[in-house]
Length: 604
Image (cartoon, rainbow, N blue to C red; front, side):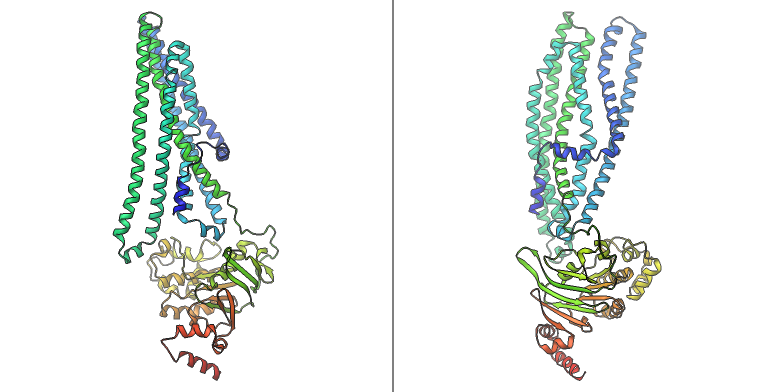
């Protein structure tokens, strides 16, 4: 959480040319819309700049001379410019916002596609909340840049330039008086930028804390309720929420000072124009129409400056967001498919671990010199105390991580030589913590594989005895399971996981504590299903409950990351080693259990 907050409060440069060039690449597919929007924007600004000059013409030429027909023509022309400005403003707003939405879609798809390629080690180090912020909040900040920043700046600059040109054409002395106010305006704007930058940093920090706190508490809502921590967590959230409120109030305070101050400076400028210009009119050195046009131009002169101040904040936010997004996109996955995979596919499913050593963190080895072989169709079990390295073996087999020493072979080929997707699709894994998506029952069994027919889905469910509870659901296979399978029991989710593994028909099957969360009755139901599932498949069973591995062809006992014992259930009991101690611990309430098993083994 501290790292998230630190990353979100760093704003970086207000403008970074390297980042901006990279951001502009996303406009390229829509450059036609961008050019058209800029054209509409500039034309609209031009017609808008023309309006005060039309007022001057109306006063000096027609009102002064009581020319009603000429006045009517100017009024019609003025209305025409208003209609054109409205139409052009509508067109450029539609084009810019549509382009912004498409760029957001493209950027989110690029980030999501990149996240799918990243290895598991990356997600171990990066919290989910931070990655979600990249796809949502940071992309939204870039949308604001594209829709209200990068293109709209053209309008502000063009408007300012046009107004200054017209001011000097009308009366250069009065124009110089207006320009003389600019240093004061620049000073006020710079002070505003500094104060708002600090306020904006505080707001982002507070938002990061709120997001992290909410994610943690919503995910762990059951734990909070079980231990009666609602009041304590509510009080914590109150403090965090107040930080966010205080940061926003500070920003509101600076905005409340800046804009009225801008209006005051604008009013002073207009007062100066009226005072000086009025004397010029009385002295017949300036026409009344010129004075009125000057007042209108000076009023419009300060609007782009106000807009540019807002765009500074937008630009600063976008630069910070783009830096975080591109940092994510530039993170290369450490585990990728080989350029030219040699074996076309896994045929037999023979597994060999050859002198494998591995550590998640340097200097903290989890596996030491692991070597074993699983022949095609053979089922082996891996047992050991918590932290012995059992699940790590499965992660390495699936290439979620790469080994640091040794090699893992399937059908005699190093797993690095296989296409990554092909390798993983050939390994069916049923985990202890089953993850279900918020779709239908059938969708969670099929898991996006359109090649699995409805009949195959139902057959897989029948085989693992999942069809019993599925048929009791209102829409059966079309029933929605809720987020993470919220509407299902732990046992039902496990049954769906077995059905999913069977539907994919993998060459290699891995059961990682797959029955540890299932009640005895459900376990009895799926034992038969497991036997069918393992038929003609190379199978690896990771288990704490030794009752589930007694029929394995071979049992491997891990202890502190090393293989200490290997053999059948009976052989390991006779050794009276680690496995025998584990068995004793699990059956300590049944003192005769071990003796009975050994006796049966002797009789056999």
